[in-house]
Image (cartoon, rainbow, N blue to C red; front, side, top):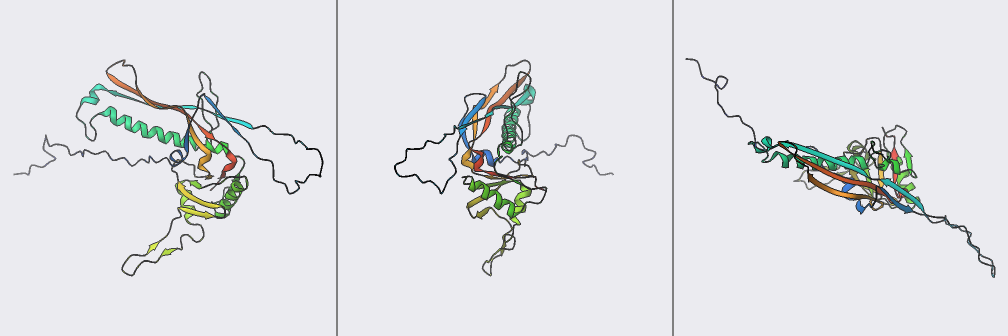
Amino acid sequence: MADFKTYDAVGNREDLTDIIYDISPTETPFMSTVGQSKAKATYHEWQTDSLADATDDNAAVEGADAVYPNLTPTTRVGNYTQIMQKTVQVSNTQDTVDKAGRVKETAYQLSKASSELKRDIEKTLLSDNIQVQGDSVTPRKLGGIQTWLTTNVVPGAAAAFDEPMLKKAVLDAYTAGGTPTMLLVSPKQKQVVSEFAGIAEQRYQAPSNSATTIIGAADVYLSDFGTLSVVPDRFLDDDVALVLDPTMFSVAYLRPFKQTELAKTGDSTKHQMLTELTLQVKNEASSAMINDLA
């Protein structure tokens, strides 16, 4: 008699775990580090200023009349707000049927949409997108950080990121008056920084009964002008490295995150998750950018 095998059987229950595994990254280091502010119009503006160059020839003749120099006005700059959204539409049947890994499909999809929206914001803030005023058919767009950092730019010239480039960027930002505390890099460039001279060769001497640790990563860089936290960001382009003073940046919200259930037009539930924001760069000379890296 032939064996009756699972290949022949009808009615065996499927084996589907009640967990959904998703390793998509959701960390947003830049947005999580910089501050938040309030925008009050679709074109968010602020002012910058600087002191006159220091001189070693500030001397007046005894008894002379006061001399009045020409005063310089502040510089007015701004960035457009960008409407960013995610929408979810789930049939009522799908919300009702028995599912693995989630109870309600709508709640699960909204949770995904929230994470996706935050990822989109991080990538947009760190982009080289040029700001767009927009019109009735063209969406407004904010200018990404790479378009703002113009005073202190170190050209990589399509070469590999190295320590002299970083030192030059830190020096330029410091000379301009900045106090950068963060080096924001892509995962690829994070590994390059960890290979700077003296990093990979270090070892931590452990007791004889414990394992010896090889230090192959650099999470802090001690420069001549202060300490930089070396932070990887999955949403930053590989060809740039940003030397930042996080206090000089903020995400300005015209409309904070809001989830709205839209009007029903059939046998489904529709939701919109939306925010409107822009990037405020309080004074771009406080930071530096190394671009065109290999």
